[in-house]
Image (cartoon, rainbow over all chains, first blue to last red; front, top):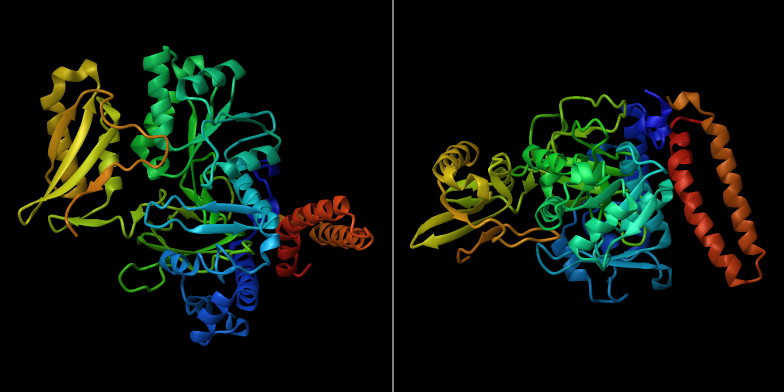
Amino acid sequence: MSNGEYWNPILETLPHEKLQQLQLKKFREIFAWAYEHSKFYHKLYSDAGIEPGDIRTFDDIRRVPKIEKSMMRDIQGKDPFPYGDILCVPLEQVTEYRQTSGTTGQPIYQADTWQDWESGTEAYVYALYAQGYRANDRLFLPFGYNIFIAFWAYHYAGEKLGCEMIPGGVLNTEARILKMQELKATAMGATPTYVLGMAETARNKLGINPPTDLYIRKITVAGEPGGSVPATRKRMEEAWGAKVYDQVGSTEIGHWGWECRYQAGLHVNEAFFLVEIEDVDTGEPITGPGKRGKMVVTSFNRMAQPCIRFDVKDLIEWNTQQCDCGRTFRLLDGGIKGRADDITKVKGVLLSPTAIEEVVRDIPQLSDEYQVVVTKKGDIDDITLKVEIIPEYKDKVDEIRAILVDQLRLKTNLGYNIEFHEYESLPRSQTKSRRFQDLRPH
Amino acid sequence: MAKEYDIKGIAEKIRTLRRNATELKEASGGIQAIDRNVDRILACVTILEISVNDVAEVLGE
C-alpha cells in the first residue's frame, strides 16, 4: 500500500494499541477542558463525583456521564445566548452558527470557533481522500447551503484538498444537471434520496443518461442510511455509473465515519473521535464484533461546544474484518443500522425502517420512492407500504406484489397492505426523506 | 508506517511555527490585519499538532 493512499499515514496506520493510547490522552484533554471551561459540564461531572485526574483507563471513561439531545435543549436559549452554559469560550470567539435539522425534536444550536471549523474540515478531508478525491477533481454541490451543517464540510474539505468546488445551491434540479454536464464535474455530494431523484430527472425530463452523458465518477452520500444499504447503493451506482461512498456525521459531533474506496464498511476516524458501543438494554460495553448496540461518541477536537460521550442513539456494530486499505481505524459492519428510537413496535414486532428500504430498493421493477404508513384500526396496528411501479412493468403487478410480500415477511416479520401508485406520484425530497409515517395515537 | 517519518523532527518544526506565530501576534501592536490572520494561522497549526505532535507524545518522540 503506497503512502499516497492516505491523507495522514502517521495517524491512519498507527498500530491500534497506540491509537488507543492516543484516544485516552485526547479524551483526558477534552474532559479537562470542558470541566474547567463549561459550567454545564462542570456541574454534570461534579455531581457524578468525577474530576479530570480520575480518567486513567477506558473503564474510567465509561463512568463519565453521557449527554443527550434533551439535555442540550434544556440548556440552550439561556446565557451566553443562545448556546447556554455548555459554551467553553467567550462569545466573541464563536465564528460559526449551525443547528440540527430537528428531525427528532427542537433543533440544537451549535457554536464553533474557527479552530473547530478547521478541525471539522480536516476530519472530512480524511473521508474524501480515502475515497479517491484529488486536486484534479471538480466537485459539484447540488445543495443549498444554509443553517444546517449538511455539505458545508464537504465544500471546505474539497477546497482544502485542492479540488475545484462548484456550488449549485440556487439552481433547480434540471439546471444543476445541465451545469454538471457543461462543466464536466467529476464528483458530487448529496443525500441518497437526491442522488436517485437527480438521476430520474436527468433520464425522464432531460433525456440525459448520467453514466454516458455526464462525468460524475465519485459520489459521497450523507444524511440518510442509503449509502450503506446495498440495494440502494447498487441503484445509485448503476444510475450514475459512479462509485458511491457513505459518509456519516452530525452537527454536534462532526464527521466521524466514512467508507474508503474499498467499500468494506464505515471506517471510524479513531484519531479524532472515540466511538463506544453499548448494549441497548443493559448499557454494557460492546467491544467486539458481531453484536449491534447504541453508539456513544466523543469528539476530541470540538472546543467551543464540546461533545463528550454523546448518546446518539444510532445503532451500529463493529465489523469482524480489517479493510484491505491498510488503515488501522476500525470498520463498522455496514453503516448506521437504524436508530434506537426509530425502532418501533408494529403488531408487537420490532421494526427498523431501513429493513423496508432494503426490500423495496432490491426490486428493480419499482421506482426509488416509497412510503410506509402505520395506523391503528381499533386496537390493531395496520401497516401500509406505498410503492411506484415503473411503467414498463405495469403488467407485472401481481408478480411484484408476491415478491414484496415474501421479502417483507422474511426481513421484517410483518404483513403489509401494499399499494401500487402511479410512477412519480409519491412525494420527492432533496434532503432527509421522511418515508416512515407513524400515525398511531401515542 | 509511522516509523518511516521523522516525527520528532516534524513535531519540532510545528512547535517553531506556533512560537513564531505567537511572537508575531505579540509584536503586532494590535494591528487587526496581523492579529486576525495569525489567529487563522494558529488554527492551522493546531491541526498540524493534532496530526503529528499529539501522536509524537504517544510514541515517545
